[in-house]
Length: 176
Image (tube, rainbow, N blue to C red; front, side, top):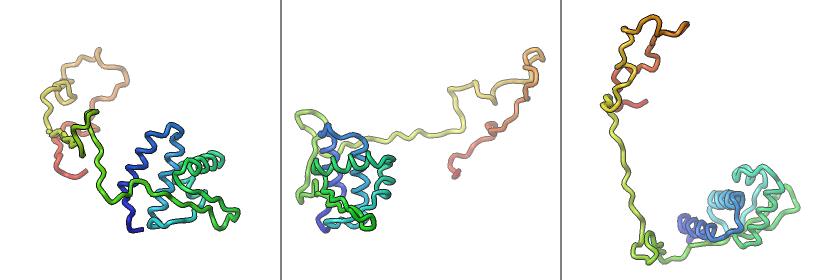
């Protein structure tokens, strides 16, 4: 279908989900699985589904939960569901179009009066990694183990070994 806009559709559906108190996570997961199949088939008007495939995509483990949820979503007009009596054909699904209008939709973000609109920009803070940590002087390499007396050592303890190689300077610009 030419007029399908993935992002607008999903935004409109999530807005409907947030307003619908009847839905639980199983309903949402099932709808997302069906939408993914619809997307895979390039948004035809109708398509056929395999119950096991949809249950696997939606992470639903119970047949009764699956059947209850898909019938409820169909009844609540999220899509049209026509169950099949033939196990080789599969059930028929007709997804409804949400949020696929041609004009741009603006969602207000921020105050209730709607003084701001558009996408909010959040700055990413990326900490600079250095080889030296000036704040923590209690690191293993700064401790002096040579002056410990034998009475302070635990019986059967292993002497300090640098298994994690913390004494060598790490190069953070190299890939892992």
